[in-house]
Amino acid sequence: MDARDEQVSGGFLGALRRLGRRVSGRGRTDEVPQLLHRPLDLVPGVTGRGEALASGLFDFGGHVVRAGEVGERGAVPWRHRGAGEYWLAELHGFAWLRDLRAAGTAQAAERGRAVALDWLRQHRSIESAAMAAWGPEALGRRLSAWLAHSGFLLEGADDEFARRFHRGLELQASHLARTARSADAGLPQLVAARGLIESGLCLAGGERRFAQGLKLLEAALARQGAGNGDQFGRNPSAHLAALWCLAGLRTTLDEGGHPASQALSEGIVRLASALRLFRHGDGGLALFNGGVEEERGLIDLALSLVPADGTAAPRDAPDTGFMRIENKHTSLIADTGAPAVTGRWAHAGTLSLELSAGPERLIVNCGGWRGSDDAWQEALRATAAHSTLVVDDTNSATLGADGTIADGPNTVRVERRDRDGATWIDASHDGYLDTLGLIHKRRLYVGAAGADVRGEDSLTHLRKRRRRGREFALRFHLHPDVLCAMTEDRRSVLLRLRSGAIWQMRAAGASMSIDESVYAGDGATRRHTSQIALTGPIEDAITLKWAFKFLPKGG
Image (cartoon, rainbow, N blue to C red; front, side):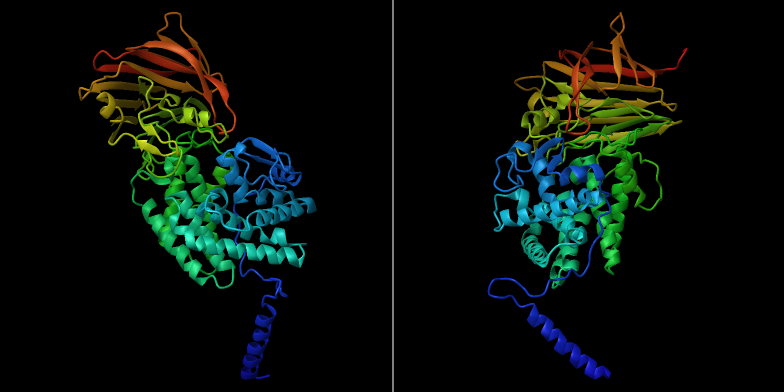
């Protein structure tokens, strides 16, 4: 057969294939559709979690639900509001397929297929109110997960499952193409763009979606690179998720014959830099704006995917609005930016700080909450749940019920100075200006040896209001592993770390007490801990001085 005959034959055979794929009267096809590409999921699955899922246990954010036990229609509780927003997002996102795949058993694969079919049965129509299922971020996450683990789900499956699975992919991809532009700025926009791009590469006829996804990605990356300090809700955990998203997308594009753009590569480098700024000496992330410590191994793995240029933690990152001082083995991370106006569940923690000594956390914020208890979520967003100064037990930013910042500091100023190995940070915010006429200023200092950490907090009256601030409370929340005791003169507190290291905290200008606090480092459990509180009346402008000093053994 010559080239022309081969071309004609190919055209004839192609026509036969197309005819074979025509939908019959019952809506079924004779030929099982094939994916054109399968992207990789770079995040490793956890065998133990996969085995639990295979047995019907859905455990997200510390809340466990067994399939069929909560009175929901069907086997899977897709609308189980009692579990909370985070739990529902995880369930509908299907990223847990990686855990079932890691389990590697026939039972795990069958569970994955059963849950996917149940989702398709329960979501035959697109409901505008069911954002957990049909929102752009949810669609992007689920499409990426289904495509990445399609081989696991389809191996050993019958043709009927393959057809329904493929139709489900096409329906969701089509809806994402219509709604992706409505995705919230930040991580949701990146996830939606990834879903468009990967479905465009993997599903036949996806060229338009692919181009649309690239356009949305470029817009999101341009916003990320604007350096306005408002990226990803200023949430360290969201930065980690964004890095996984972009690194996975880069791999998909490379394998699909579409090299990553310069903007994508630069975005990945920026995210890696921000993650290094957010890391404590124990390898976990600082707790700001709903972020949790995260798994150390996954942070290491995510950073290993980024070129190793300049792996040291940066002193500051304009894209985040945070600053870091790292002298010897002491690390101080401070929130020196205005609250995020994008994203959700931002906290009123302006000028708060966290401090670690080597691999041990000393001063922390209380953390973020991923459970279903809205009261705890709101409590941990409050200024009082952060290691900073609060006036009249009033938040420095107005917290919206929808998780946004309704109103907050309009101006946050910061200046950094380094000299002879020591570092000073001077910052201020006007979150109390409109209501109480006050400006909060904070000066931080870390000595060259890292053994001397000092601060000065002040309140200055700039405007006369009908009601001026009456009382202040400067709080230092301690990590649960830190034991503390007041000295007899009640002028200082001794802090013992788990390693046996001793630090001393002294303060002037306020009454000192040790009060109860709570720590939610994983977002799912609340551990009892303590806080050092400096309190007093606001009669005029006040200045509080405090210091943490490492006490060497035998010193």
